[in-house]
Image 1 (cartoon, one colour):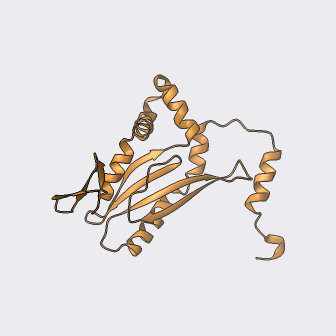
Image 2: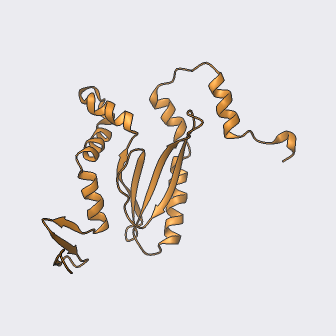
Image 3: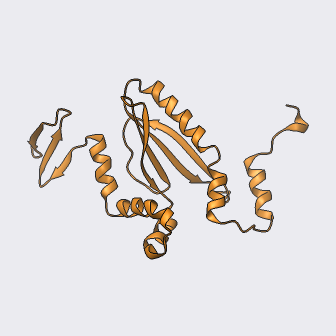
Length: 179
């Protein structure tokens, strides 16, 4: 690539777009544009996870980040991890099951502002967005955090006693004080 054919930087493109008058696009059109390469990115991330965690189940996490200096630029970061992450805004989580060679959606949590709008206007949410509302409500009431703990086989703190869950479904109790 010669100097006259250099690609423009994201910053330059962002700056140029800010100078233009706003085009009115609805949220669905914007989402479609942002998700153009989404399936391919999920596939690439899943392949990377299979290499990192051979013969194991793992999670594929997608995080949406708005650039601090370029408010009209949103980036998606895709990465595999062994454990289920703590639920958070701007997050999509999938679980890859090695035995089935299958990836399943665990949850989708939009940004904070959209989540608040959905909660405040439940009765106005269109039928095609009801599953998103369900995830938002489960995030708000702690259901997704409990699901994360279950998927990670984490210990639960119950009235001064820690319950350790083993993979064979037996439990061993231990007092917190002193041991």
